[in-house]
Length: 206
Ligand code: TYD
Image (cartoon, rainbow, N blue to C red):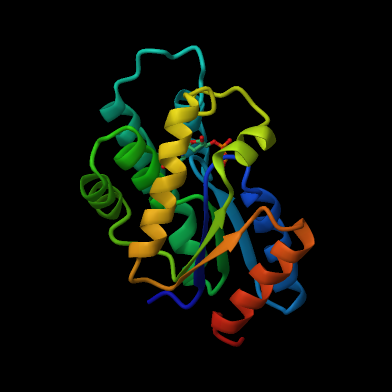
């Protein structure tokens, strides 16, 4: 039985997920929670190695299915070796990207099928699903301007990132699980405050 609380932060490129993950962690720590901030792909030594393959811009012939399986493999290791143990000891886990990223990027934007890709990740994690998901919504243009790197995923076409953006909107709209969509084009302080008050309202008291 896990006693912790699992928060996923999702969205396209340049939405500010890592900034807001850290801001939320600081907020919850000040309230006395033990918090683990982690990210995908990666989060464990093995999953970080898989991340190296996934983001290597010199790999130009990775089949879409291999990409989807590597994201799922990274997630399987991360869920089993880092997220579950943290939840078991009662920590709040904040994960910068999780299953919905695979559904948006591989399922929708790559066209592999959203249901199929979701099932793959649910199988990989033995159904470890977030207790709450925050979708940071930014238009593709804004996200593109904020994009910093030139990794294998970032250098995909504008069209691809447009499909990712629409997919996150569709995923959030269809979700039956606890979530919120936050307009991440608002000033950073406002977004951080909204994220904090949203989580304060749903997290179990300690
Ligand atoms: P990262 O540098 O962490 O991106 P960001 O700062 O935008 O979160 O790189 C992760 C990239 O991998 C990003 O382009 C999104 C993509 N991705 C997938 O395609 N599928 C997935 O399941 C995950 C977790 C990430």
